[in-house]
Length: 83
Image 1 (cartoon, one colour):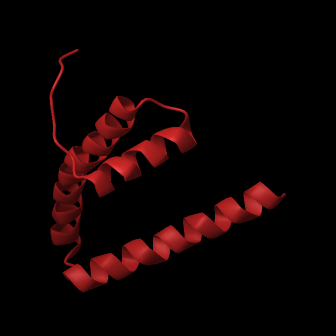
Image 2: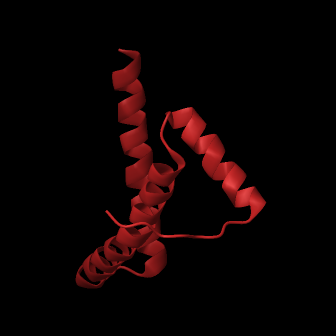
């Protein structure tokens, strides 16, 4: 594992520390997780763009479909969690 020195403004550092406290994780792990999500999100966008082109959906149609599916998954999870 490598060490990297970064500078964060006070507001961002406070958010990192708050998240670390809530999760019971070190700050470095919270920052690494956030970076991982951001960087992997680029690959996800590429995959979604490719799928959208193959399906001949506009960006708005693809977004609406994603929102609809997300709502359905959340509804199913809510039902499962209350059962």
